[in-house]
Image (cartoon, rainbow, N blue to C red; front, side, top):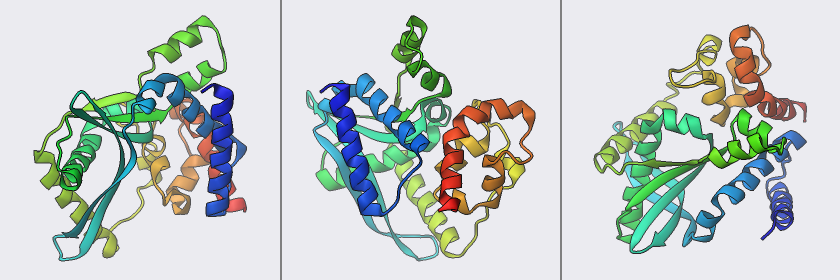
Length: 259
């Protein structure tokens, strides 16, 4: 399949999702999404073609929180079965550096999914990895250059982050999920301050507001995030780092409030 055909499929899916949800996105957000799809296909086309099961829904029902509330854990994964080995992939719209710098977070989630897969299918997961599709600012710039340096940058990009299987993670994750459910149900949570959003976590280049908050579904209702994304009181020394990462997100934020 060539890029032209891939773009046609992308546009068809976009129109279908727009019809189903009744929502649209800005042109910048749409182009950002297309770049992720295009890069994923060009870099990981072989992985995609070898998928034996795509978007497998995993469910672990009837869980009970420490305070007695029932809840269900769900997840979506892709599976490749080859030479009697099963590899589980979890596709994230995150930057690969974010995943590498916070492996413990992702490792816990994928070990939970591996446990759920075994309960569902009765077979063991042999390997697991996150596919981080969000291109870095350097990579986004390279896709529009087209010279030899840009080609090298794209060739060096590896969005697959392999993670270790550890069955001991499962109990800890279930407990963590339960504690989180209890806090949500009882309203024991609050948005971090603007100063927290401006912090740069060790091992990362982008501030907390860029690396973490832009993945939060409630960010458009958060006063701290609205100040952050619109660059209110944002320190000059981190402005350049945050600028390219948040440009698309800023358009989305404005679009959410101007409709």
